[in-house]
Length: 477
Image (cartoon, rainbow, N blue to C red; front, side, top):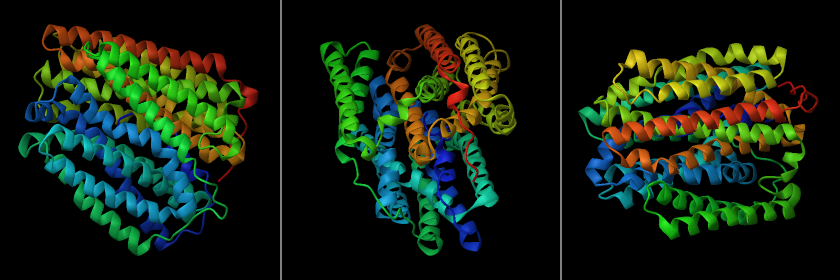
């Protein structure tokens, strides 16, 4: 994912917390959480429609465009669990406010960046800030509400995220056209100021009574591994990586294996306890999340680029082309949540990704001569219908596939996996972002079929690995 949509289990982070009594302070906490979280949702989706303009202004090649996205996703993916754990130990409000402040500084750096390296530094700081504010904004909701009020608060947060994800590309496209690409980062500053003021004035501090030692070594190794693998794949996907690309990718893979060894040694004190994978169902849900959100994350980056560069769309039109996706997901997720509650998650989590795969196969025609109504819209609608069938059942299934003590960790890990899938997918888009003309249409068609294959693997993972007897009844709020 690139931030345009909430992670599949983001809402579960709040649902797993012990709550307090709602009131005026609770409502203001909700508003502060929504305002802060919208920074991640809007910024992730806005940047995608601005990539051609940024590339032209800063003379960025394909690998540079990939890193504009991945410089944000890499620290967010690697540090998301650490951000939540640090909030539990040192105070969620404290990490929440620090994250907002850092996001504001990073956004100003992006807006003022004189060159690509400065922009990438700002994007990396935005990713670090999001890893601090996102899990703690949701944990603060879990602490501020209880029972049905918590469910309504989480629903409001998710709905606001869907709206922000939908409007972000359109707003970003308009800003790129009328003001310039730097303005898409400046709009974060008033949001940061408002969220900071609300958080400082009205949000109550909360933390875990028994904070475990932070797994800093494991997180550091995982970050280095993801960074090396991402750099290697980015170089290789552009066709210019050669030996160094393979060495970096291999070194990244080796570092991730070392990370697993570290987590195994730390046991329950690990940031990612390997006990989570004690059932085939959780392993299947992890594979499903990775492949499904890799396909979706690649779409959010590649489709606006192709529409602008190949089809001549304006940035506003390219952003609007994606509007049906979050709209259909938001409308269909509640219904599919009820269906999954009756049938169990295995069926919708098999059928939904397979429908997404069909949508990506249709997307291969977008680079041709058809109109938006005959090529782009049908593909986006089919993908959206499939995602609507999978999002809510996936969140429920992850929470129900582990014991009560691991629900929060499982949710955070699953959200990190979704973002890692987007990270890897973007690293593999070099051939698309480097191509022009007929070569761009061909490269996008190949990428669409690869995404269709990834979505199909996601559905098959659910079909083969999800076991009904391993999915317990979720605990009530």
